[in-house]
Length: 50
Image (cartoon, helix red, strand yellow):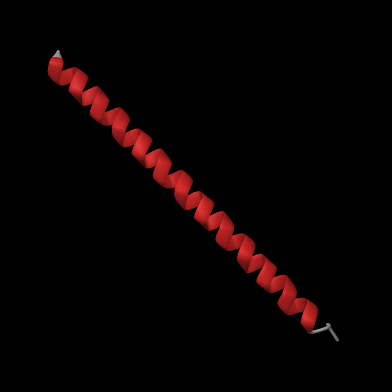
């Protein structure tokens, strides 16, 4: 049973690590998209559409 408990802890650890990694990448992606959107807005404000 000890091996089973260790396996559970290991699995939970991997799940938490994966969640944190995805959460961190999601934050970075959101920040990048926000910056790209701001850049796009300012670029299109400078050049009026004919």
